[in-house]
Length: 116
Image (cartoon, rainbow, N blue to C red; front, side):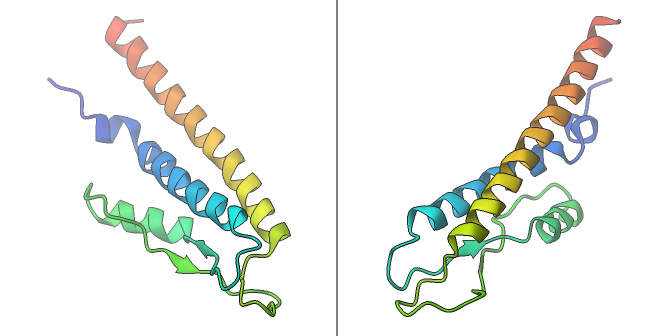
């Protein structure tokens, strides 16, 4: 009987992948904080996880949305440094947590395979 890694690992590989995509978007936002007319982008992590859950393993690109600024700037840039830094920090912590869960799952599979 074979091991179904999709079932054994659960949502954790998808969560790690989505966290990585979000980190790339947020870092791009931070890098363009002073770029005129740059539009900050992000994903709705919870909605994307739900979409992944119901897509029966078919992984597609997440829906990238433009961030609505709290206070519009004169140069058209929608990046708010403090908002992006907070989102990046939160995403980094969540990424590490997802990696920890994935590592625990893999450790459990290793023990099961070794018969421990």
